[in-house]
Length: 522
Image (cartoon, rainbow, N blue to C red; front, top):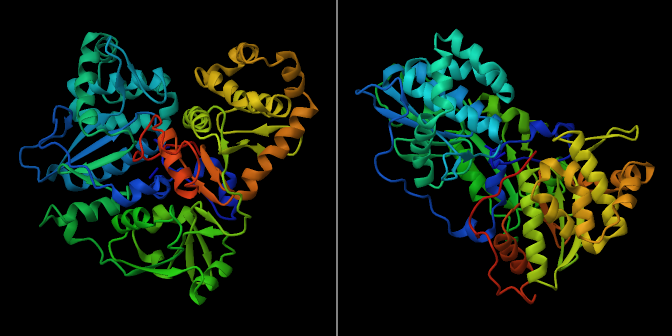
């Protein structure tokens, strides 16, 4: 669940130190909540093409009763976690379950490919499709090895291949030549046919699986398909878990059906009750957890006995005998409404953040009545005049430049960020050119961003994201009381205009779609 990842997926809040570590808030479960309201009301599950491409099957047997299709980015942490769970399932069911692994990448049509995590990820995709061809029986052992250090796979793959008794020269020759390109091109056809862009995505016997990705929850789902297995006979009985959702049915984006579906997939015996936030029970739960927004999700104590608890426990906050799901709210209850305003919270080197910046620029150009309240950064103030951010020191340096530009050239910040977005990972090399192109004095910004002034500005800037508990990039704050995530200008417009229908420009069609869920960093 999901960076989206990766698309990820992901992420978020309530008042807890848990959220001080952004690496822990990548649960893709949360993304489902934050799609545009139109999609939440009307989207139906996509039916996959019949059959499926089994050329990447590992440990395939003709007597298998079930096929798992796993769609991943090879350097996505959530994809890696799913691969680990799937391997445990494969080991449990032995010949009853086959696996097909497909990558999420783009064929550029010239023998090369692109993927979210860059050239290193593509290189590993190519190695893995070659291993699946030449060493299918050893592939899962290789995967287990490289996934221990997937971020540095370029340095460890040879050792992992050798330890699995593979010829590294065969893999290298295949993966760096036309053969590997052909194999990867064939591999991703299934991904493209299903229009899958979230890592991980799982299909069981050609049907989308949206339940929990821990091996126990997946095993329960498989046991509903593979009958008579000894694995299923030994599963413990599922306890009843009660979930109370505190919500406001007048809130357009507060539809909890996506979260309900996902949790029902994770928890086999779940009873869901929804109460209004103005009811006595709703008020009591909000007070009990000192909650500042809606929807609020509260589990009964029996969640401790459910197999999903091991996966969910990091995202739960206990009070008394019940547990609150740590999720960024949509409707903020303690904020003064400011109609027709929009603010954007980002990490300046987050790929989804830069896409959102481009989309916001398009949106504000098309809807002139919308007042853009500026960029806010997601970073940590270390208290000694320095900062940390998910994508490292280069990201902090760019945050500092952008807060200085917002002070001295506020009307030019969005044009500048669109320029940076074209090559954001090299912002340190291009920022001066982007400044000059937009009439910004680079010397002035350099002096500000490397001195006390920039530190003071960034400290003040990130205070709002910390106060609101926003740790996923991008997050948008609409009307000063509604949070949502999007990287699509059209989707943003649909949300903005649903809340502010009188604005001019709402009939303009913008780029992007209204239905695609958003990705995020954090």
